[in-house]
Image (cartoon, rainbow, N blue to C red):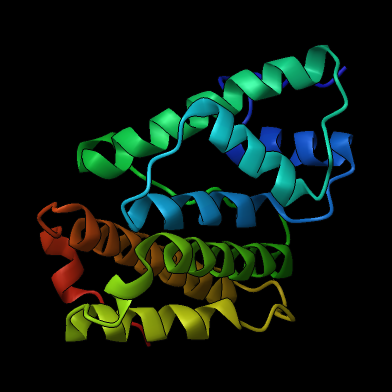
Length: 198
């Protein structure tokens, strides 16, 4: 029996298991990107709004109600609050919800592309008119993210490929924190100043 306990599984693992058990039509990493995009644009959701967003993203009218789904709903509420805290306090260690290096490379690349697409969609929904007036560095960063969202997932497993995807993930992570800081009145992290996408 699958346990959705986040202390025993990564956020990606329990979320992916939950999506599979419910017959969801979309990718769990895209959901996390969508959430972070909306938070980065300054939007905040209550628990009901967040869970409604989850169900809509899964492509369902309602969830299958059982013990597993009840635990997963609790974990989803925790996921939301944890991510708000992580974005507001960099010491909390914000990270993208993606498959780890136990997955083959093209699955990780596909998930990253999905995550970034979700992020851009969420940001567009929440920031709206603010995007056009964002400063030059933010505009350039968003163009980079659009390019990453279209990343080719037909990569073969290799040490070089693993290194490259990890570098891109870190670039996205720092970029997201920078965007969050821009639209939420936080000071941008110094580490973002030296990060460039190659």
